[in-house]
Image (cartoon, rainbow, N blue to C red; front, side, top):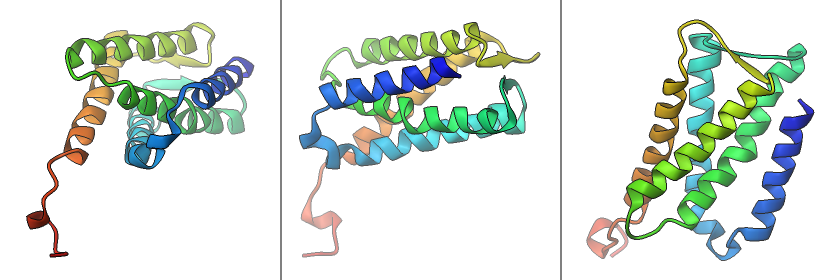
Length: 154
């Protein structure tokens, strides 16, 4: 539990140090999308299918994933888009997926989360690739061409 709080604090410090706050307003939809995707994954994997188990007291088992979903994951989504290259986006996405797969493996290793029967680490990797792919597609959709024909304000 303490380790996760330390990770969250480190991610907040990194965010304050390296985030381009001039783009904050532009990236808010990505932040909310990142939070939503993580809440959705947790609902499916922890609550609905019960394939993961969060260790700790009842309150910490409830709030640990939520606190990470509100700190680590939106920051990761923000940096993913902030530093998005114009070329080799697939490799870039795989690198971010690998980084966050490692983060999840760390949580399994330090026993914050345990895997129940029916879950395999490859599913975590696929979820990470899916997470960043959805963020990328939302970003492309948000950045689509804007013309006066698309609005009602002519």
